Every structure is written in structure tokens, then in C-alpha cells.
Image (cartoon, rainbow, N blue to C red):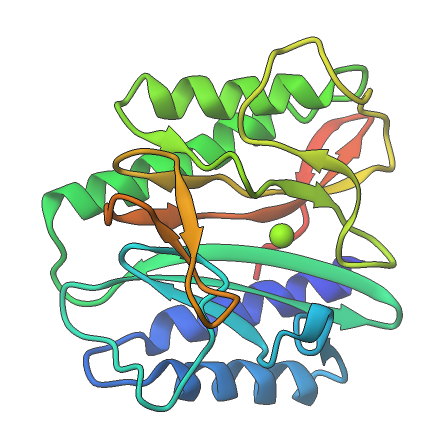
Length: 237
Ligand code: MG
């Protein structure tokens, strides 16, 4: 599983480095797919529930599940959320990050920073003997105290021999509640944070999730193992 996670992290890093004005989201997707396959792994988003690509690439007010396309061109000032994973020898990795294209607004920078930090706040609470709600509450508290909102409709999840497994890992909740965390569990923690309201809607393409109020959104995710020694981030390049 560590192998699957490292490949996932390397593919995400590769896309991040390729984000520049004028590049299409399909070009980024192709780059990631080629890389993952070159490692003897499989892009595990492709075909899952019918999703057609290796990466979900979502720009600005798009939250998640953006479909890469040749005519979707990234421009300076955009923030680009990329979510992808790899399966290697039957095990899965999953990770996401939001990248800035060139100079972005101070608001966009702050949103990205808060979202990334909220992920690490959640990870801090991925402790053996704790509960899923400890992670959820930590993310929610961090985000909301900074004036942003966490998406409610989509959540993190267990990850292992399948990409999406129980339990759900919401980014909102009450500490001390929910499934007990035990060593050996592997979970994807993935705050999706909106600058405005947490309400979202799905585009007519049936995939792309947008903020209902048009505000910016950011997304960071790691696959994390619960160990007796504490949380271990698996998706590091
Ligand atoms: Mg995920």
C-alpha cells in the first residue's frame, strides 16, 4: 500500500509542477496517467463509477470531480484542485492538492493555506483509541474559526484494497463520536473548503461539483495510516 501511495503522491507532484498558464486539464491528466502506468500501477479513478480520467481537476469555484478536457485551459490566477490515486498490486493510494497558477489573489492564497493546514489538523487527531469524530471536529473547527466552510455533501473515506471503503471520514462532526480508530486502519482525510457557503451543486455533466454561491474552493488530501506510534502519512513523494 505504501508503494501505491508513493506513486500517487509522485503523480500529484508531477501535475503540480506542470500547472502553468495555457496548459489544458487533459494534458495534465495524460501526464499523470503515463507516469502511473510507467510505475506498473493503474490509475484507480479511471472507470470508477464511470469516471473517464486519471485525475479529477477542478478550477476555482469547482470543488471536486472536474473532468479533464482538451478545451479546458488553465489561466494565470486560477487555483487548480487535483485529486488522483494509483493502485499497485491490489492496494490503493489517494491524494489531492490545490495548486496556484502564477499569481493568485490573497483570498485564494489564504483559502489554500487554511485548507492545507486543516488537513494537518485532522491528521494530528488520527490517533489509535480516538474516534473518527476527533478528526472531523478538528478540521471543522480549524476551518470555521477562519471564516470558511467545509463541504458537507462529500467526505473522506477508508482506503485499502478498494479506493473507497468504510468508514466515512467527514470534515465536520463532534469529537468523541463515530468509529473507533485502531492501528492498521488506513483512511483518506480530505477537507474540501469553500470561501463562502458549504452548499454545492453538480453541473449538467453529472460530475463537476461547484460551490452554489460561486465562491472559491480548495481541496487537500492524504492517505493516512493509524499506527501505535501515531498517524503516518502514506502519500509522500
Ligand atoms: Mg479520496
